[in-house]
Length: 103
Image (tube, rainbow, N blue to C red; front, side, top):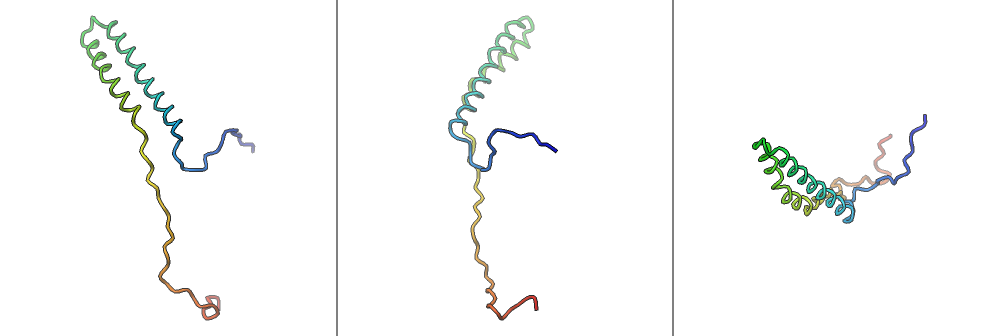
């Protein structure tokens, strides 16, 4: 059975993404959120006769720049590292030749 091959790199580490990739993702999020404000304002103008809908669209568009800036400036939290440390055993090692569990 043939499995599809992927030519991209395989992720073999749990390291955090680079600063540049984090910044690019935050810029995309900011641009998307800010671009949502324009349709809200245009729709509010179109639905000006329905005052409650126009008001709801305007109220939706007001906090978008503030939220976009907060989300864009927020870096992802650092991962808690689970450090595996060697813990010495308290039991004594068997003396060579005195204990043989297979006898």
